[in-house]
Image 1 (cartoon, rainbow, N blue to C red):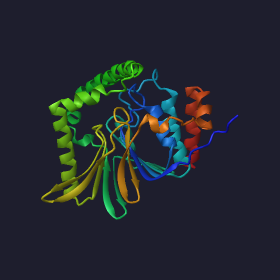
Image 2: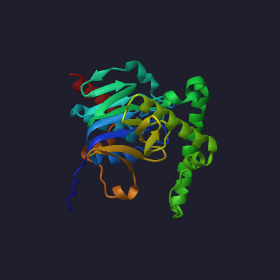
Image 3: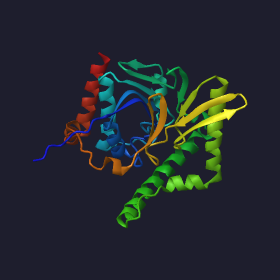
Image 4: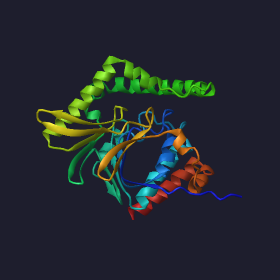
Length: 288
């Protein structure tokens, strides 16, 4: 029997992911897990909406979603610095702002100095007027978005079978609606204007599911704007290596031969209750 050769994990100085929306049908947890297993990060920034508490249901919590939590906790237990920045879909965690346990820190925003550069990191829903003034309308839209993702999954299954490849209905709709494009532009302008006025070199956001990396210049100065995108439509993350930021985008062809590891195989044999008990055990180890 031929032995499986394990790939060497790619080193990443800083990893930023956001808008994973664990607990929803649109979450690409299997793809995200393959990506997380392929890298060895020194610092991890979870920039909001990692767990979707708005739509969380005990009826839908696949083992692949639990494996993401398991992977993050494993990193924490190994001493990898993990910052959890709260978003609007996991806003229940905002009451724990400032909480520290082992190498895990929960907060609502983060200021870091990275290689001498002032870096402002936050989720971004603070700029969402609809979110602030009509939360019920935002939640209603979120459920509609999740339904669209389910329809999209069915369409993609048919499209792949016909040899036409995958499409993103939600992404195409957003890109074709002027109000959505205007919202993204306004979001970026607001974030960068505040960052420039405070003398920050980088501003990192999530929330709008639109991966981006660009320099914004005004008469008052300039700033590097970065958005980590999401794991619903774009399957993207931000990586920092050798004093440079880049956008990682998942592609199936890059992970075709990846195998599940032994820990994953063990999890597959466990019930959700057993997995949750294992998670609690690992948290207690971290706390001590």
